[in-house]
Image (cartoon, rainbow, N blue to C red; front, side, top):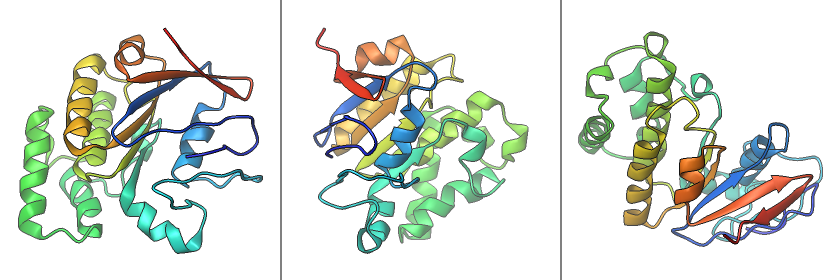
Length: 206
């Protein structure tokens, strides 16, 4: 990835890295997260490339939709279907995965995140923490090359444990993970950390 529009930000992340970006409220973390996966197109654009694909190119957009996954800050906005099982299936169906494989993958991830009993429930009946864990599950089970998570751990009391699972999965599949967070445990455990402030992105050299 290269220059980020509307600022002096420059960020290059290698495949398989787990990077954390922090900053105060209003510093632009959510905007940057959305720019990186093409969720939002800025008025002025610099250069953003993901595996040499442009998230704002009509030609590359469909390919990137399969290569990247964005977890938004509010987990209540992160699902398409109210039914948990149907929502989890939706992403994998769009990737062309056969039904039998989808079922096994969903069961495996729900078991690992201790949410097996929530499979046939509605999101409206779940806690914020359970909904947040399910959005992280969706990101991981898609096996996308790039995962961008915007404050995805803020509702979790066991953020460190969930992060450890995410990092282990990402290491195994050489996925690139960019996490926007203020959680100290995650900042301490990431491969690299950056501070976003006043339109500048500065790497922490500690």
